Length: 282
Image (cartoon, rainbow, N blue to C red; front, top):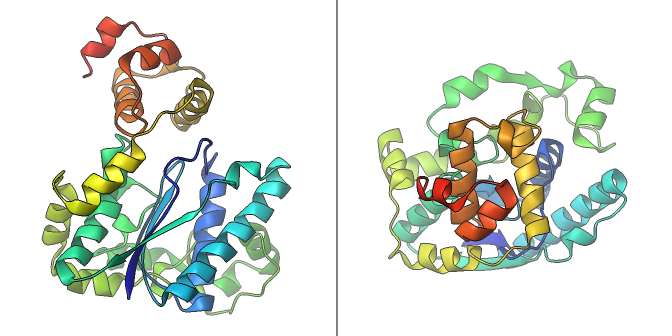
């Protein structure tokens, strides 16, 4: 059976505070998928929630999620001295039936960064969009675990579990060939062009998209959004919002409005921009 596995979209704190958090989560997700036999067709890690399209029985998938949450909680406790921000990190599972629904689910998941005003799906590091129909690029970067050394692997993966010598890595990420069913997705869409068209299309009448979009738009506090803004600025090497370029600032405004449902007044209050300026970005 296929399932669209998401976490609670209404988390009041950031799930991932920096790229180190995302990297730990991604590699641990890969390790658990391999260990539990959960097939992952597509994934996307957003700031405050995740999307996965998985194949398996519901029991294995729930075990996969609960173990992933437990491991991430231990990591957060070690790094931040606190994991209370994960209290709302809960699974939401929706069964996927039919080929068309399956294709729609994959496209929806990969489209999330674009919908949030963050980036083109194919340049977003924390989703599987970069994997499909691009095997010749990521296989060139693959290296076996034995070339990294035990100490480096332990530090990179935050585990003392021994990796098999023939386990492949793409930089600091476990290679997709071990845990992403990319060939199945390629077969599902047929060509890279068809996948691109599906990911680029935005249909608010789609049952799943309209349902999930309603869940994603909720009220966020100023304190929460200030953390989002700080993280965004840091990604661009900016100390404050005023240090962002025009294009980067426009993307930030779009992200706050589209992903977090912020009003123009709230955005103006948080960024220091006047509402007249924000009107030009509407």
